[in-house]
Image (tube, rainbow, N blue to C red; front, side, top):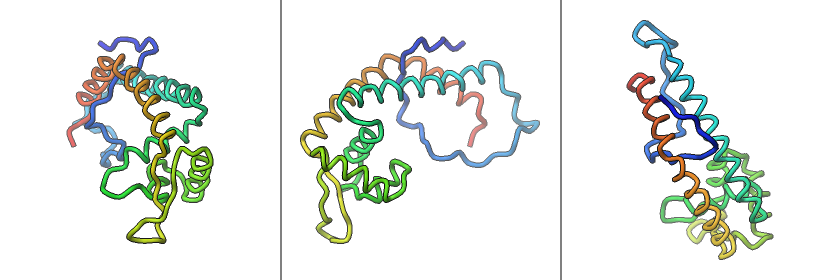
Length: 170
């Protein structure tokens, strides 16, 4: 049985993906009906995500950042690969239009949180790097967020177990 959230976020395992699920047929004879516990798990997960996002947004505001600015700093820092993230890649990461990413970056550059420069290999490409102030703000917010996620690790593990049990194998 799932426990009620009680305002605490929980850690999500690294194997969760935000990629769209593979298409599947509407409920069939092979798929058992969802139970009250399944719906409770979905509701609790939705609530947990919203509570964590509100907590994270508050942390960003405490540092004078908007939620989107914080997300941009995180996307820049978390970008995999040998080359720095480009504005186009940042737009893709944040699910925003390229011109919106340009405006967002301009505000971060103005606050000296991010540096923008031409890529060495392709001067048409603009890449981004965190400045010391951006890195420090991101570190503080991220530590606070990870502590909050750690407080709720058990409930998210239960929600994930319920989802895996209720969803048919891929």
